[in-house]
Length: 506
Image (cartoon, rainbow, N blue to C red; front, side, top):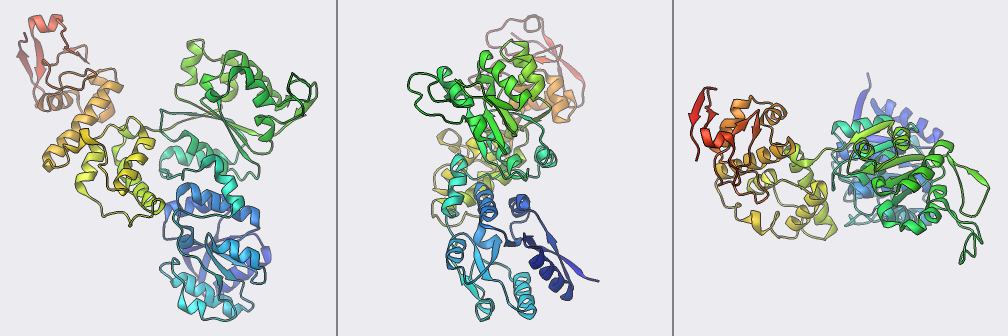
């Protein structure tokens, strides 16, 4: 029975070469799995040690490099491209981003190549046995780039999204994104600042299988007076200064994806015109009566849920219903601090390559304690900046947090607990019952934690030395100068065993 090997994958466009590879692998009692272009970066993210053998045309190969560039993948390590050794230009261009090996002329030689790739622990350095085989020695190699280099065309494809995507692809929201990426359904991305809405939009486009472009529109950056011309395009003579016709952003997205970032900032008038475009899937340029039929997918992002904006009269309900077929809520870091640790060290590794610094340091428990204790209001964007500071040798969080870096393990754990509890209570409007349910503990346990950690005042100053907390219908009072009925007459506190303790306050 053939042995399945998941450390070497095939991304092969040529049916004849694919059949030849699979046949020879079968003779070696090894089964190799084939993956499409859109899954290359995902496989590297899941298994950083995977090796992927590629034979694609230049356009698809550049798309693969663009995807890998967005996640900061070391393509010299993960990718091997089979090329025609007589095509010198392709060989040189390929060698700038990954290993290039001439297609072996005989099956015996092909099997030796496969065996070497299966056995090799790393492709970051040239393999002596491979280089010694005259029939199919690597036509060119290049040192590991820092950061990942790409061909000019690939760099052009990345120009709109230069920051590599280092995403938590194991999170449920990314699994949902992969599942719906191949459909043409419109998608709404909801998330706070820095949660990675732009990355998610690119991720969906990359996994959609679309050969069309990804056109991103930053809605707040477009002046109201120029918005129609920018989005719908202009015909010559439409207005003074319009000397020639040009396509707008929507028309440029034909065959691909139109990404409207921060659509909640769009005026109601423009929303009405956009609704017509989405329903008819076509546009009329400014100054023209010619309807141009288009085919594109729409992804929009917003910081505030669109349903809430509809209630406030700031967003058209008909456009909301047209867009919100699928709504993906991107998670915040403070609710899942364990995600921050994994993402942080991956960002450190990428930053070290980006800045030509030594490889990232070993895992540091004190640094991890700081990461866990921090609130990460800026989410992934703030985390990436912290990782870059660490790679450059600066304090991770800054001077305010640096004072905690020399504390004991107990103090660091307490700081983490304080940060987590305060963030949860703020998110739950200081309702202890709701916060306890979200944290998965009984309310009396949460009250005990609040008391032992000295969390009595949830004011903006984050000073935890104010008067005692009180409970009124499960809500933690702020107590900053307040004189509630409970403060005047006393209130019941809760001990760790759930018993009530009458406590007077002044």
